[in-house]
Length: 282
Image (cartoon, rainbow, N blue to C red):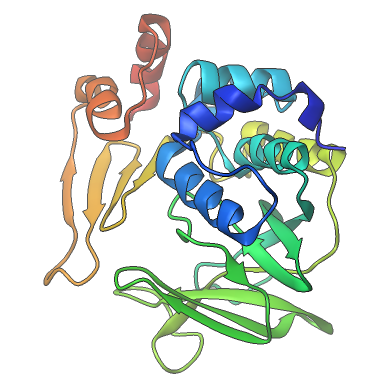
């Protein structure tokens, strides 16, 4: 289903720095999830440059493994699902609605993985950028907190008449409080299985439509265990939970961006792509 047989598993695990157990266990899932989130960036540069983002496994491997680039959730999940399939995990891919506090119904433009292990289900959401560092058990009410990053998962109505799950994060400055006690809905999802053909449709919209938030504006994220770097067009921001005051932020000159991508995000653009990028950074 997810082309696991075509994956260069050794290269993928080397990209993550994973040298541990390969059995389809919860310990392996946790190790892979954390390593993927910390190793592979979220970025939409390909869509901004070319309004096209191939989603076949060969292209995704070449980009995220061979070129050590990042990608959107669809690229992350295409690669991650192939690895889970190859390792023998039982899972489904789902799509969700990114809300970030909004209450209106938004399209399903986010992909994640639900893994079945020993009668329990785990949300393995590796492609959000600022993703949780651990899988989250899918129950009616799960709270996780690693001391820096905190999340809540709640079973609730996610669209009129339809139940599902909502992943919450602390509301923070400028975010609506959807729960009444300091939490905002990051995204919602149901357990309706999605397949590669479904991801291709949504990926095409995200890369090429003028209605997509990520087809024209550069956005890059890099998560560390204690901080998050964000590049929104030319605005570079570092979010450090628990640090007093607003996040550190500064506006870059367009010519600075390729070097910042390399130094801060570990993304090396070719000379051609760097030149193509500059006019987009308005």
